[in-house]
Length: 255
Image 1 (cartoon, rainbow, N blue to C red):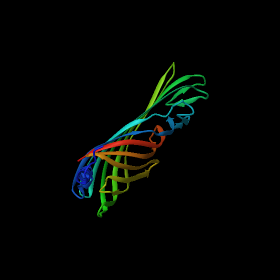
Image 2: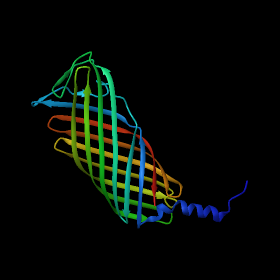
Image 3: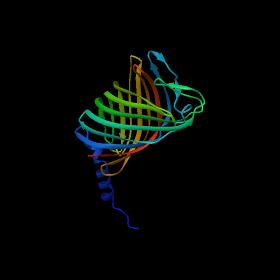
């Protein structure tokens, strides 16, 4: 087997770490993840000011866990990073009811076979400003503040043989939080975390994303992490609680 010379190995390491060496200049890229979350969700509607049945989408409607793709584009100028993200969430269920559910002014009775659907689209616009960013010989560290708006567009639908009823909820939710990360071996290996949240007027949204990554090829970063979302939207005619948490895998292309 032919041995690689020391200069060749060194050159490969330098080239592989090139995207990470953009500090404190310019960097842009895209990030995609495939998420394996566990779902916990409830919903309750109100008709003519009267609260109806609060139901569990898993226990009452037979909704199962699903996996999802998520995407993000970003650009960084020195200490400032802008991100745009999109996460589409789709759940379906099919179950014969074991209790009566009142939803949107309609009654779904015991023994009705109900097909259910829970869709939530999440769009993110995020600004991160690094308050600390230090680069050592072969390591780096940053700590930043995050300002963010997450627009949530959701819909719950129940269908039996006799009727279909749906309710939607929409809310732009402002959030604030922190970001931190550290890189080693000229950022060939990294660990990063973002935590954001906000609670107001009966609504709340808390989100955390923690991940590790490494660079196997120039401009490519492979990632693995854990994501958590806790959302409550309280509108005039619906209250929806949604919790998603679980691991993901992903990749980032940047230059």
